[in-house]
Length: 111
Length: 116
Image (cartoon, rainbow over all chains, first blue to last red; front, top):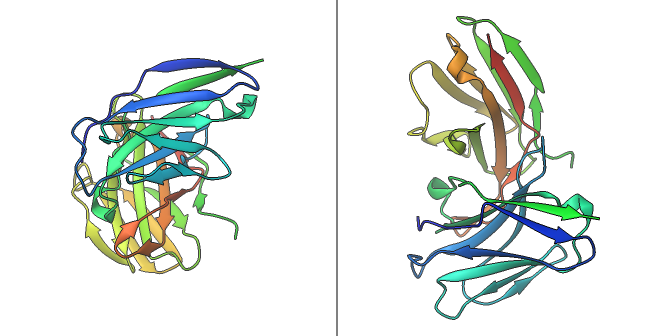
């Protein structure tokens, strides 16, 4: 699986958009970009995933660059409950590659 | 559905004792995964099952660890004998596959294991 690089931590003001970047310059053509988050003392929670097109669901939007070497997870209106560690994972999605979660980005939403 | 259910939520034991962690996946899911999370190594995949059959246990750290899935609604992860370095949070996750892809993993709340 392709390696990902994320900032260690970010802050965001409550009510503002949180934009979390992820670099995956060695991504292969059959690999997806997945995002999960882990709120303190809970198991990771699936957020969104995509292959090459931008995706949106009730939780977030995923913007993938045209060359697929980087992506951005957007939380449009961050709340205090969005404070968590966000993991960007690149994988084929086949079960055996699911997954090793790296360090992630610790997002702190502040009032 | 109640989600993935793990028990116990917390386990404190002494070195050398046997530890059994339990997991009930979401009904209908055909994949089950066991993960371990530590500060040093992050979240690591230990083993996963497909339709109750162990597929890949290459992440199991050593022979002291074993996992079983006797039926579609129950799995155990056993450590015998336990050691202090096994202290971690153990997560179980399940998923429904489509076209061999695992789109979403649903995680349980984890078991916090402390081996003294």
